[in-house]
Length: 146
Image (cartoon, rainbow, N blue to C red; front, side, top):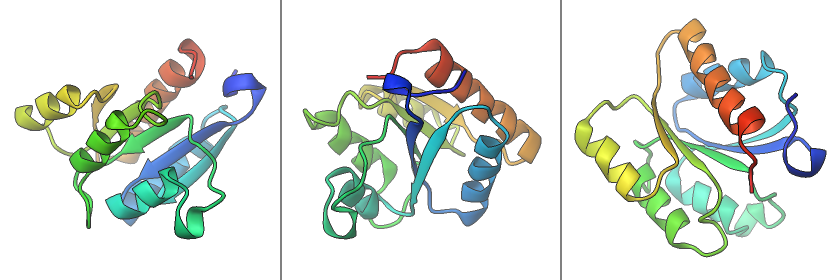
């Protein structure tokens, strides 16, 4: 259980500006059996630099999956999602929106922008781990990532 394409660790890009949520994600991934390489960026501009391998990210690996917060500094998650899904080289990377927003307009907007799923971020560690395990079970064990 728990390997990415071609039997290698799953490449995960977490785009999250809240240090507490980053820690929760790291803890949830540590508790999993999924072999992974986690990369974390803290804002939308940095996320796009990572994905386009610009600046300090010149040798950044292409992620197998992106976990994207919506409310980011510099460039918000909706804008980042729109750019990813309009780019021929990036649009096949699954994007899981992981956010605190339950607003119907946010849910509709990100699905209209072709997000692969929308998950409301729980604030408690045990629930966060449960959600992360569900994401891992589906995306890393059930699905075949591109």
